Length: 480
Image (cartoon, rainbow, N blue to C red; front, side):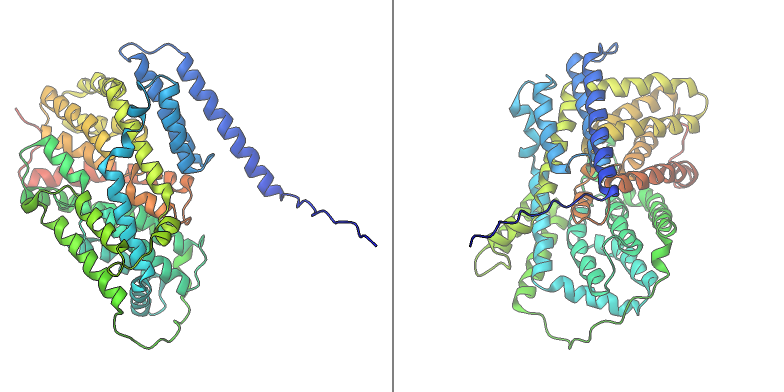
């Protein structure tokens, strides 16, 4: 006797899932319509046609990255394709330029270090130490993380490196403490790693891309002077930003953490020692770049190779392929391509000219000149995902405006740097943010909302803290 084959029953989607899918579809259609409208409209005066088309791609990309209407890596591929099909760039070599940028491979090397810290057992060991020191207090665990940022900056100046390691450490800590992935405490810790950790690096001139690029564009700033000028404003950003995270996710700090599983202390294993030595070796090379003048990607690649090398490393190639988080690479590389297209197409210069047109109105009020520069930097930061592209666009213009209005050009340059560096509106704007976002603790809209908060905080810090402080240490606002 032959029985009937039962077909699997279709599982009905829940009302919430249907609503989310419909909302995502409508968002996607709306963004595509906006992109098509910008492409169809005539270019404004002074904006090249190619620049208008690149701006259309940028608006679409920002919308997709902020709303998660498409997966982030898929949005990156859409960016590359549309840059070519829209006529924003000459061809695919120009659209793929971000994929040959050293920064993309620096990110892969740093993520490999973080993965090795996790796989070797070192992350769990450090996580148990932090949890033990917190004595069951969520607030203490959060405070330890915040204190680690400036301290680790001296050893690991790159925010991306610190984040790549700490995200694994605190992920283990949250798992050991049985804290759900979307719990307020987990989101608070990951938001601090996403948005606050980066700020500690900018205090030091050799702390990353932002201070190096900004100092070279401004010119005439040496290491100790940079530390003097940045220490107080960035300490204020760190404190106010951390307090804002605490307030936003305050529910997560009320609960006690469960007791830890009792494990006997054991010495570091051979794999852990190798991970420590390779990581510290890369850090030593980053800290001594003034001696050997290597690009930061070189130590990252050395660490990457050693960690995967047979009998030396701690990872197999299959582990690397499976767990590295390729979303980070595709999003960062495509955002670099977009940033460079904005510059080469003339879109960045056109945006900057809009700023120039507005500022001279406030020639008689230096504070209003700086405030206008801060406000004008927001749409530029939104449209240019890469911090280097943002700085290269805004700092020269801000300093030129300072000369025209007799406002200290250095202060104008530093003010827009802080306005851009303090905020992240979507993960593609920072390699360290991508390392956190890819773990699934934070949503893109959540990152955008906190970016708005940090925008307001940056304005307050520049106007109420930085300007009086810089005047007190000899950098007066009015010159000439």
